[in-house]
Amino acid sequence: MLPRMLADGRIWDGMRALMKDNTGYDLKDLFIGSEGTLGIITGAVLRLFPQPAEQATALVGLDNVDQALELLNLAKSHAAGQLTGFEVMARICVDFVTRHVPDTRDPFGTRYPWYVLLELSGTQADGGAAATMEQLLTDALERDLARDATIAASLAQSQDFWRLRDSVSEAQKPEGGTIKHDISVPISKIPEFIRRADLCVERVCPGARPVALGHFGDGNIHYNVAQPPGMGKQAFLDFWHDMADAVHAIVMEYGGSISAEHGIGRLKREELAAVKQPVEMDLMRGLKHLLDPNSILNPGKIL
Image (cartoon, rainbow, N blue to C red; front, side, top):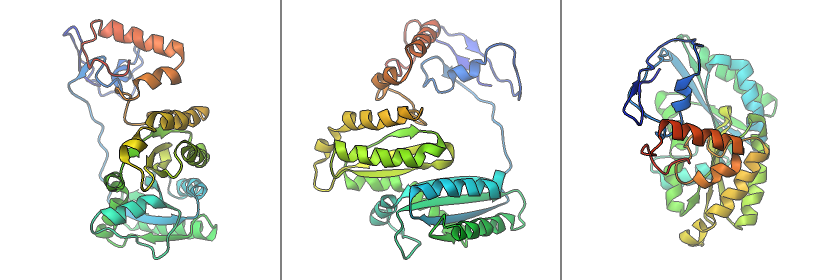
């Protein structure tokens, strides 16, 4: 589905828009995620989906991250294909955003340890998404899967809810140094991972502040750690490798990934060999040498 320029100058035109094609190896997936180390992608075939006719957005306050897992399962049973957003945030994320990002506020009068930003989309503008959201949240509150919930009453309010989530990265900067982990684990293991990682962070650097948020529905957690108040930025960042090693060790125990979205690049190049089987590394090096024998494509990345 993607045309690619190879290291020797040849062009492979893979612009086929087929849903199924089992004629040999799936070459396109070989290049996806290779970070430009196997070829240069010059075009793409896109699959388009209709724009939702309506959306319902809600912010939900939780006692603990375990409730997020139960709420996700409940949302899937209520909404099925309508569920288009399920973002989880620790309380510290909301604290950072409301402290450092202008014109943001906590929608609740009570502080909760965890929050879920929930979005449902509908293909018909008939109020079905809002009705499903109301029933979902009613059931969640009755089952003690949530402490509080508020549904956006307007597009502006929906955007305000999303701004709380989308501004977390920006809001971390005034708090000093941040050690970031872009990890994924099986969805059912997210709460357990976070609890163990929190204890691990405290052992590595007492007083460090975990800032966990992410795309709960696909197992991707941005497990960031902010420096302790009063500690110098560089003194904290000196813990980077020790902290990453400790957090990633827990990730691997659950069969997870040390890079869910952002790739390997240079930063995680040395770690890659530690989390991959030797046969995997041999295969990747062999493919790299076959397609780019002179290492001219994005040199120094991944391998």
